[in-house]
Image (cartoon, rainbow, N blue to C red; front, side, top):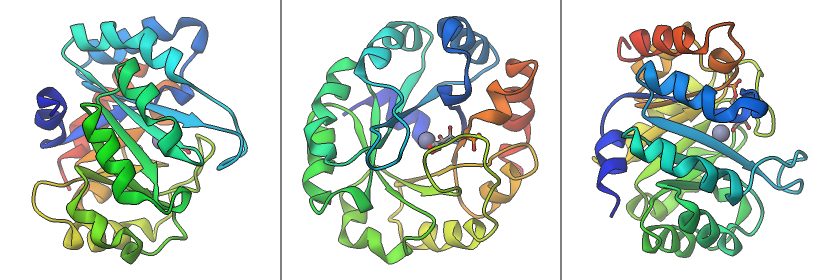
Length: 229
Ligand code: DX5
Ligand code: ZN
């Protein structure tokens, strides 16, 4: 059990997604948002198959782990990959504190969730915009958080899909108490209060944070309205 991650996932957090950061100065960018209060850093892993782009692997998680942990934070790894069971252990060993995978990517949802927990991380289940809430099925009893994609996965900077608000409310109603609800895609200072109002407590923000001239100020502005739902 990862107690720091459990503690953070029980509250309202804005999760800067490093997908939109400047990778030439990744450590500095993470330090900036953490100095502004961010405690959960979101890492987008794409394999070129489940989604077209190829992005980040365990090496980057490992490179950031000490910095983030020493500052009291945790790493939330979002796997947009096929056959997640083949990669989960590499990410937990690299220092991931929470790992989410897509229900569309594996028929072995409960097994992958167990594998993540056995690696000492929180287990999250992700559903795409086109996937019905019911697809979470019986797995809702086996996970620590659910993630609602509010854009189609693969790229940062896409517009928020408005139907995600009702979907979040439906997910929240299905999830047992104590299971966190994350939302990912198109979250900014305008959409943050709406998703929080629908029941999301973990709000991923990529381009709205790292695409801004001042990422620390952008983070703070979203965090200030994130609990005003
Ligand atoms: C998209 C990723 C997101 C991405 C969000 O597939 O899962 O985490 O970084 O970016 P924004 O916040 O710009 O929509
Ligand atoms: Zn993501």
